Length: 300
Image (cartoon, rainbow, N blue to C red; front, side, top):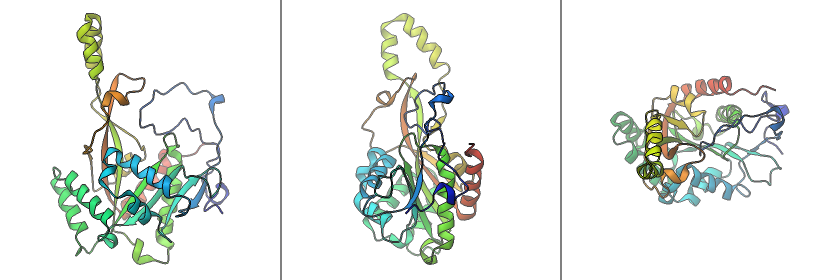
């Protein structure tokens, strides 16, 4: 049975234009005509340990990119899908289908003895070491003696899943945390959200070609003068989360097995993925979820 259907929530997602999406490869935005709209029915389901294991593990690989090899992903997937854990998947072909999206939360403090959580907390502390305030707070929150509880929100989806699906997923998660019988498990003070951004970098290929051709040198100079230094989001709802965050930062992945030019798709710049790490408290997460709904409403 669907956890939520379009008729059971104020969000009717059946007519969302999947062209309005997050695109981790920054594909060029085409002119979208009315007849290019694709109608897809999205249904919301509880996490299913039997069906969702492999897709969830693949989502974790996608989330952590080449650094995924640093973590025992099977163990982390088991923690996410353990019996009774709250969270939501989106599917289009019934409960037995593969999820297109997953959003859930894992209790970090309760699972500090888990190898997966140990490796992740060590990783987060290492990544934030050049951001002293962020780093010190994480060390305090990850301490076995901490009086505060931290939930790690795992949010990942297929490329081209509409960002408009995220507000209802966050609202469902918040509602479940409030109504669950296991209050001790989900009464979090803070949430840590790993995500991704991409940085646009000058193309090495263009530079090499420009050295061989004066006209290309002039072309390159013109392009370089307008090289954007900003980052772009992979998950566009991260903007609302960052606005409400206690701390957030963009960090290099440890392993980079694919160079920026290899990720270039129909644009003038190479693409370098970065880890986006967001720390937010409970009240601010609720506020961010409301802002997501305002920023990415369904207009049918």
